[in-house]
Image (cartoon, rainbow, N blue to C red; front, side):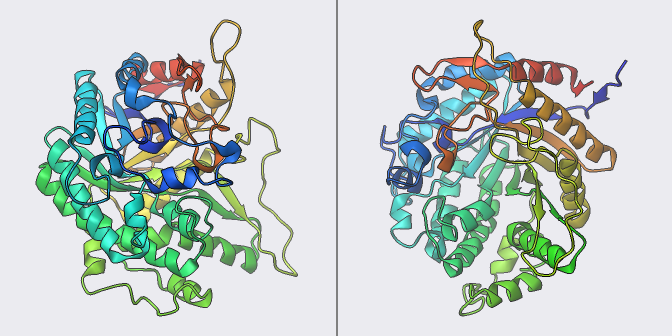
Length: 454
C-alpha cells in the first residue's frame, strides 16, 4: 500500500484567478478602461481576436462560483481586484459600485468558510495612467499606493491576506520589452524603469495595508521557474545566470534589502537598457522596496533549459523529457515537479522569508466533457499529484510552506493565448457559461479532505 503524504495542520489548500481573466463586465457599473481592455481590442494582439469582455462572466456568476469552491472544499481563494472598477481613471474618487462588488465577494467567501487572498495588481493598469506614461513614470507608483489605501480601507476589516503585485517580472519584460502583453511596449530602457516603479509601489503600499488591516499578512508574488544550463559549459551557465538574474534576482534581491544585483546592473548597461544608469532610483527608494513582508508567493510551472548560441559549445548534457502530453503541457511547458522542490528550497534558504505560499501552479490541458458530461482530465490530476508531492519534499527539508493555490479555479482568458488554453479545474463553456467540475477538481476535493495524498 502506498504511503500517505500528510501536510501540516492548517495548510491552506486553495485556487487562484485574476480579475481580467474571469470577470467580464468590462465596462459595467462605472468600470474604466484598463490596458488589457485596450490591448485585447487591438487587432493582432490576441490569438483568434479573443478578449476579456465577458470571459467567464464571474462578475455576474460569483455566487455560483463560490458554491463550486465550497463543493471542492477550498480553504482559500486568491483573486485580484480590478483597479479600474475601484478608480476608473486610476486615481481620484472611488467608484462605490466597484467596492461593493468586492465587498460582497469577500463576505460570500467568509460565509462559505473560505479565506480570501486579495491581489491588488494582476496586470490591468488603468489606461488613463498608461496614457500618462504607465509604470515607466514614478507617478504611477504614487497612484498605486493611493489605490492600495482605498481598497485596504474598504476590505481590511475582513481580508487578512494581501498580495501587492502578481509577477512584476512578467509586467516588466513581456509588457514593456517584448511587447506581447499589455501595454505592448518594446523598449528595454523603459522596461527597467517600469520594474523599479513596480517594486517601489509595492514598498509604499505595504505600510498602508498594515495600517488599514491590522494583523494582516502582506506579501508579493514572484514567478520563478527552475532554470538549468543545458550543459556544464561556461556559455550555458552564464546564460542561465543572466536569465535567472533578469527574471528573479532583479526583483527578489531588492525586496530583501540587497539592492539591485551588481551583475545585472552591468548586464543591463551592456545591453543599452540603462542609458542614464540608475537615474530613476531616488533617495530612500531601496529602503521602501525592502519594507518587511510576512510571506512571499511563488508561481511555478516548469523547467527551462538554457542553451547558449556559442561556438564552440559543449554538447547538451541535461536530459529533457520526450515531447508527449504527459511530459509537456499544451502551453509547451515541461512538466518538471522536481523543479518545484528546487525553487522552494532555493528561495527559502537564500532569502529566509518568514513564510511561503505557492500562489500559482497548474497545467493547461483542453480535455473536453465526455458523453456523460464528465471531464476526465487525468493528465492535470497527475500533474498536480506529482507537484503536491514535490512541495511536500520541500516542507520536509524545512521550508515553511503554508499553502498551495492551484491555477486556475476556472477555465479563463489566458492573456495572449485567448481562450485556446484551459488551466481550470472547472470546465467553462464560454458560449453558455455552464460550469462542470473536472475530475481533477473531484480529486482535489479528496486531497483537501484528507490534507494529503497517497
